[in-house]
Image 1: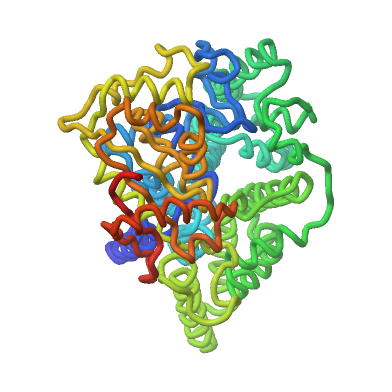
Image 2: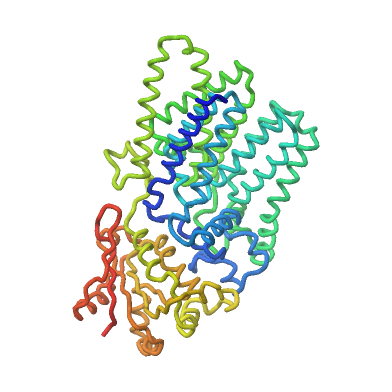
Length: 565
């Protein structure tokens, strides 16, 4: 590798890393990333939901086997995220470090894959194509499982190729990384048919290699916690976890809000195609389609059979998503393979047709224009406060900021290093967690703190469930502060002795958090009775102590402090 090639590689990785980390805390937690982070914070499988229950709600305690997984996914992503929280503290940005760092590592891995498949030029083109893939950047900037799984999948493929071409000892590392990928998310299995098809078609002799089977054995050993967890859950509850329960069409009441998820086989690829188009952008997608088909030609012509491994893996992932169904948050794992296919096709197209032709300058110019558009599309989808232009200039699943992240930062500042009284903690346990074994939820964080906090926090019921769970439930569950919705608070006030209980507990004040108009318009529920509480404060002459603005400067939340009369 020449000095210039090293500079190009580092420049492309730097560009990708910048796009991943720049304004990493912009978008709110509007999806599954919120409850992933909440559970990872304490490595505790609990979602504060009666419609998606977990072992602590079934048994009142955590059975030993429940530490080997979570009810909806394997444990590895939660464990890695938990470590980052332990080191850096609980914040939105920290919740995204697992995905962000996995994405940066993936930029290096895809270079090695491209180089192994073809040459250094293909590797560098792959890094560039991946860094400018808006869908890849989006996946690396959100706290979901896909990016970590994709990184392990690429590492597994890299060492599989090294085992096939260099030394069979690499099959052990391949098995290790594939196993870690399965411990992250089961959808890595969607790639298996493509990998097996390639091995049977082009590398059948590998099945005679003992080290190959040793790699498979290591894969099974690494993934064994999944089997232990699911068999234990089946013995205890009569069903597997969410994903395998879905696969085997198991109907039960433990996850009543997920009954509609039970899979049915379909064969309509347009949903997946539309997701890829809006994720990649139209120009990127068209280049990918042309590259996909031309790559078969170049692989056959040059007899570079390793390219078939990438092509068949992509095709296998795509077909399984089509058959079983998909969502925009899932298909980002296909971005690295799309980038690798584009790089392979462009490199070989250039060598075959343009290397000594004057038309190569037009090729350069077109490439620069497409790269600039993809860069703009990426920024418009992931970074700008408000997207520029029409819907064709950013992904339809762009995640917005409504002010929840700013509210979370404010609440963190309010409660950081704080501790409340044992009486208040015990009352909170009886109100919300009375069916749990007290020892199972006796967290060390409840005893940590250097200052007293004896206020009651009431937040507006007009909100979105996901970011509200992260913002408030982590302080209520892991620290046992008294935090409740306005609907819950009004029920207590209207009960026979509710006001007396609140007085006995000795709260020195009440923080009332009212949602702004923009937040109310996007809320899951409408609860106009919150205005009763706000009016009570206003009649006392109490104005908002703090106004929280969203990323665009709109008033998102109003924080009052006082007492009700």
